[in-house]
Length: 276
Image (tube, rainbow, N blue to C red; front, side):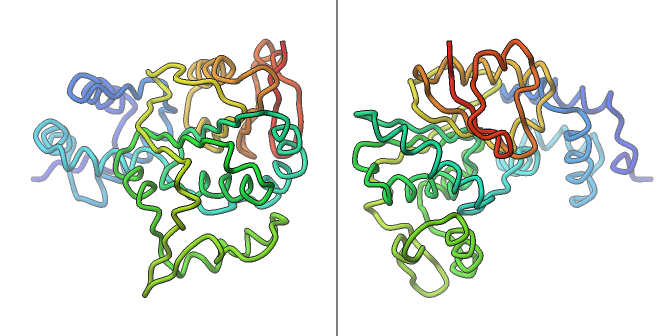
């Protein structure tokens, strides 16, 4: 009879998968929330009707399956101008300060398919700051980065994105920033020229530049507290003096010692400024 562990996966089996992936692929999920990983691995097993034995076999022998596994396990929920009040706050409370910098470097960590980074690019463009800005989008997942690099999205999604855009206080139309053809919307070249997407693992990789703004929204909720603290330290070291850190609505600086290194800019939207 077929093994049906998909309905009964244990935390011990989650630990086994974490160790297996690190050994075979070099991806360290040890700092991820076990409850989140358990839910996502269980979902993979159920959707694909796999046993644990079959899952481990595929992870070892099938690189294409591992890429699919990575997509499922790493959270990739994003849209343009998601949470419009956040972008309104960045426009009103952060960009006026950033305008004093000769060069502006932005890092969107966990950028997924790129919609959020393009949203930042539009904000900068509307404040006449884009030409002296450079934006980096990073993610652990190469597949979503390929989508981000192409800058091509389903045209139907642009209706919702346009509503977000207007609610954020932006002027004009979102359609100024993409070219529509058939059922696809392609981000215009002028908005893509100062953007670079690349692989970066928040768990294991270090500082790679100095930034005026770092955004990592609704990513760390899937990390345990120890990894959250490690990543916040990474962001602190990656920010220039008085640079800004943007976290998601569900996240905050929970570590008291780390919190002392930042000033609260917007408590509701979880925007902070580096001090010290």
